[in-house]
Image 1 (cartoon, rainbow, N blue to C red):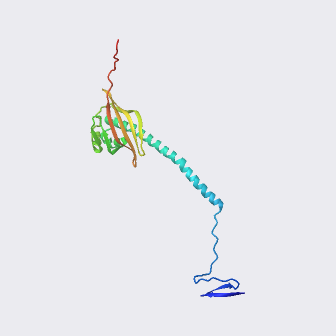
Image 2 (image 1 turned 30 degrees about the horizontal axis):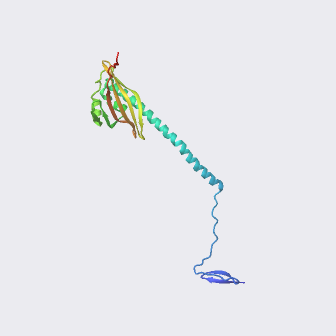
Image 3 (image 1 turned 30 degrees about the vertical axis):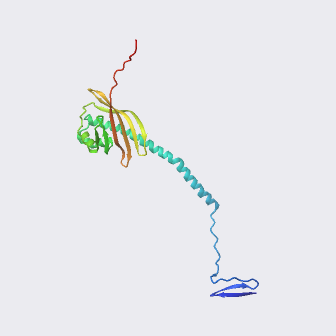
Length: 213
């Protein structure tokens, strides 16, 4: 036999053979929906994608960084050769004054670059431009300058430090040699030379062996 216990608008069936415990907060319980089950194969697929992603960046990223660095080094080296070719043409008078902007662009000098001459004089920015613009053809026909013994000294995240011997050849004068260090940077506008330091190399004196006869 069953009896009904009424609470508000809801009636609850109660068995006579078992005591019932009631609460004023009791509410009818709705059946719970079963939680959606993700297929096991989908979990394996997702885990495999994560592993593949990690492996890709673990192995491909270093290769991409190495390739970028190699491209940076090659671009700086090519720019160094172009720098001296443009300088040779300008100082020998092969180009006229209206080509100065083109010469400056070929040299890829930064507008805030610093150049330390063999005399120790330091020139910056507009001083370099003004001095170079006034030297069009000053070295005479046949003059040219080339970098030799080019060596990459240091590799930084966004710059490279080079050393080389700059040889200045003049038809009527002995060849002058300058030991030079130069800093090349990779910026938003491409390769730029930001610092050059030149030191004149003296020709070694004749060596003689001194000893007992």
